[in-house]
Length: 238
Image (cartoon, rainbow, N blue to C red; front, side):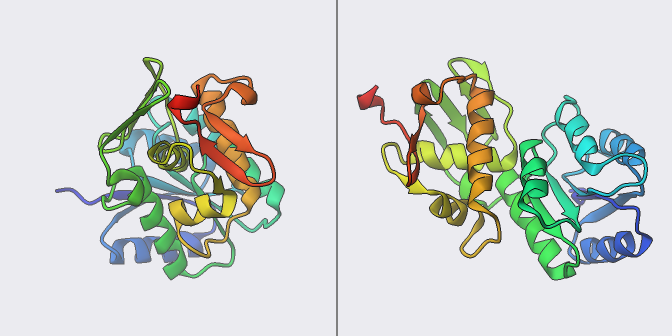
């Protein structure tokens, strides 16, 4: 079986070499790009299992690269982890809104980076063993999720989701009627004490609703419980 490829897109040679070394040491194959144009080209030609994408690239923003990747049928399902020296919530949320699955802030340790890589690969089904892809199919409220095949349909139409969006939707669908706080969803999907803001959960839920074609939050199959969190509506209540 060929090794899983990880694309490392960063204009800093030292970071590309550091990540490449650790990626290969961990049993993956490393491919690299030093600017946005190369990242897009390599992503299309190599079809990596995951992309580590720096926001501050010399020719275009990594956010623009992410946007293009997520709107290209060839690359839309490839998980993306943003690498950034920016630590403001706005920058992080922007990346998540564009479809990124996770983020790493500089400076970072290779150990942390590889842990994030493995976590995202598990959630996307590329490595196996993830909580979100362990169970079989779930059907509720016109939504059908096949976790083993990483496929989702809503009212007969295919829905393209990022790995994190898929994990959240699948988790809620498995527990209809149960209310989860934002932190509980973070813990369930990414593990306890994961450094992500609760606002990012709101962004993911908003994106899921848009992809389901739900324009009115009050009519969504994912109900907002104000001051608490979210739940999947029980079919008996609809």
